[in-house]
Image (tube, rainbow, N blue to C red; front, side):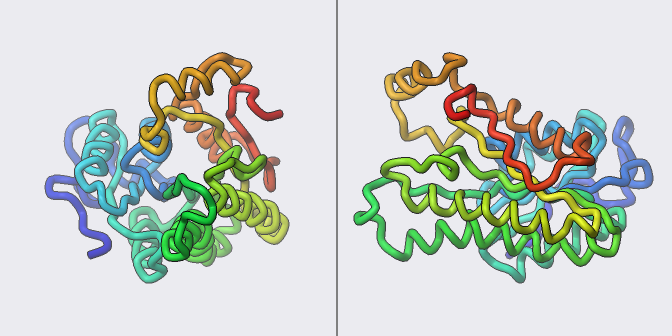
Length: 267
């Protein structure tokens, strides 16, 4: 059931020693797929910098609660919210919850993603549809849900987490590459549409990052890939979070851009 909050998680209007109260925190960000990997790193980075973070998750309730508590222990404000981004009704409920916290939605980080590895003709259409529903249509629906609030505010930042494979394409990840390429195109078009309204839309397209999504690769495969990266190593989720924080906080004249932390793998 979407929107179930964890036992023991602080609700609006309640505080503990060392925890910032809601009237102190004014900026709210929704981060999808924030229980692990890049999403978790973004939640921790922004939460510890004073943002009120809505930690969206689909199935990893334990990980979402852990991320929430880590932010709270650091003096920040965070709330887990269960919602499948492929379910528009659930997305709308999450958006209204986020808006209820401080009366605004200042940023959206579309990070939720699934992958399918295999030859193109071996991936069935049902799995392919699910991939597009989460990676592309889910991001579009999340943007659609927050837009009325951002348009009313005449401000906001939408950041879509794509992939360098959306820029170059990857063998055995054809559907994933196509969905991420669509996300990049969506970013560029929506940025032009929303710029007159004071809303910025940008994209972060990471390279090879050490996350669970790459857990299927052997240590040997990872080492071989690292040798092809000019910086000689695989990236860390925190390095992607730095880019997201920049686009949220310090990029007032940046919109429609693709920032690709990839260690120089593509330029």
